[in-house]
Amino acid sequence: MKYITRNIYKLHVNHEIRNVRSKFTKAAVLKTVKEPLVLEDFKIADKLKEGQLRIAVKYCAVNMSDALICSGLSEIKPLLPCVPGFEIVGEVIESKATNTDDEEEDISVGDRVLVLNKEIMGGFAEECIVDEKDIFGIPSELSYETAVSIGDSYATALIGLARRANLKKDNTILVTAAAGGLGLAAVDIAANMCKAKVIGACRLEKNTSIVRDKGAFISFEIKSPESLCKRILKETDGKGVDVVFDAVGGEIFPSALDCVGHEGKVIVAGFASLQLPQLNINELLRRPSFSLIGVSLNNYRTHSVRIYRQSVKDVLTMCKMGVITPNISETLKLEQVNEALEHFSTDKSSGKILLKIAD
Image (cartoon, rainbow, N blue to C red; front, side):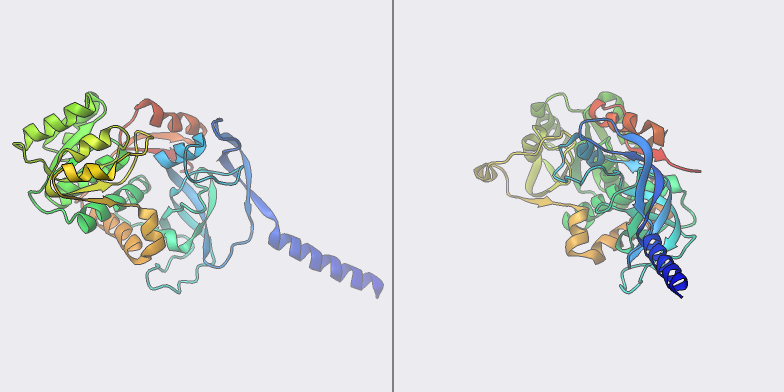
């Protein structure tokens, strides 16, 4: 009897261990900020929580926010070691989705999905765990590569331009950092969905043709902050633009403000310069009256999940219809993750940089 009881107890203990043990996945791991990521087997939870799904990752986009986290310059300070990467596509291999929220999709095992996993991250790996709030079905017409290139930047641009700036046909808009992932998304949305007149300002002359191909009627290199305003006033007969979409910040930001016309709008959506824009409030009074608007997709996720989810669905639908098309600059292997991250400090690429995790 004691033998039977002891073995039942051991079976119970083993069952509990199985339920809390971790499994391993091949991943690019951040162990120390400012140090290269290390490719190794990384522990992830074996048991999903309610509302979570497990994804077999196919591709993960590499974004500026990933580079900032790895360099220690981000406001986000994850517990180390961790696996960066939040813009993910892949196949659902396990699910504990509740599907209790009307805004969420009925996602099942085997479905092709796009995930914006900013809270949990984990995309630089063969498998990751995601929250059902952040998962979106991929239309059958779209490839994994296209879907992973459109979620975050295009949804941000859509909210900023269509919802907040109310950009209309024939309005004139200046997009700074126009050759970057977010900048090209803004050019694409403004030119091809809103039918606005787009002026794209780039950090390098070699990228101006890409911006024009995306729909801008004028694109040029920013040779100095002062030259930006002079060029814009020349192109608009001194009136300035109706909307500025700034994705640079830093020393370009004050000059971008000088480009907006009376009762125009300035969208602040990113900091490609890695420098936060500085503004003295009294400077607002010396310029034409304009609206200053900050846009963050992550804040919409927190404060208005309906708009957050609908915006991502909308850009996927527009892409399926051929209205917009993301630009993929380069696709690298997981083993090349550190090379991919370096692109943000060297201006080597324009558009989206992808890591191919699996076939």
